[in-house]
Amino acid sequence: MKFSKLYTFGDSFTMGSGIREDAIESHYPYGGKYTDYVWSNLLSKDLGIDFTNFGVGGLSNENILQTLICQMQNFDKDSLIIVGLTAPARLSGVFNSVEQHWTGFTVVPDTYDKYIKSDGENLSGYHEVLSKEELDSFMQYYGTLFPKHDNALWNYYAFNFIQLQNFFLKHNQRFIIWDYTIWDQFETIHSWSKKDLLDLHWSPNGLKEFSLFLKYCIEVDLPYASFDELVLWRKGEGSSIVKEYIDYY
Image (cartoon, rainbow, N blue to C red; front, side, top):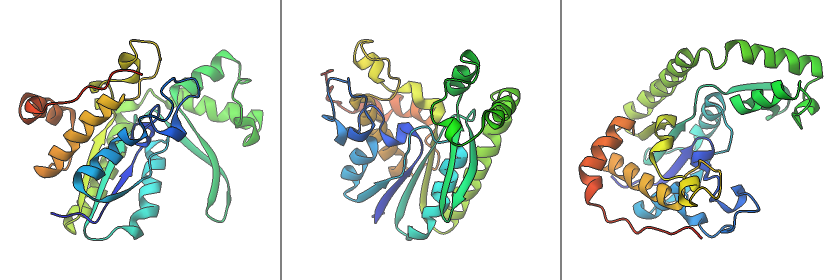
């Protein structure tokens, strides 16, 4: 099947954090040298189609779903849609809106830890949205329920995305899901740099292997690029692929 365009949705692992030029720490010595190795770039080149990457660092599954819904009007019958689901222990809040512009933030475990350690005084930007009393209340809610109920949250989000996927598949559109359980299955910037950089996002080599895995999933018509499918691919077709290794800058 020839696709008209690739659309990708997700968090920092879709965005290409640590590699993409506008999503890299200023002190990383390789700068934007490997921008083209973001997996959406690599996959679109392999497929010979244009792409739009809607990945944004720190997004919750709720944010990802909302972004996807807003873009559905742009899909055509030959679009290829790939969605990366993030870890469930992320909570999004919306506290102000002007037309189609919303003000809010997403709390992740690291954010909550900083809040606890600093007694609520070390969250730059958050106090611009909420008063201290409101922020305390929001964090108390998060600390009580998240990530204590990770399994229930994960089942909830996965179910919603799979139902949306079923809609697209029913209309003969390709919609592939992958998730956070394979984050640690590809080479990270941390290991690539021999622990020089504490960044657990994927290295150029990890991004390249992931793009090859997704291409395989497309070719064999797999709707979910899961951990189990990755294991099988590496034992089978993936084991015979000659990968050119890129050394750390």
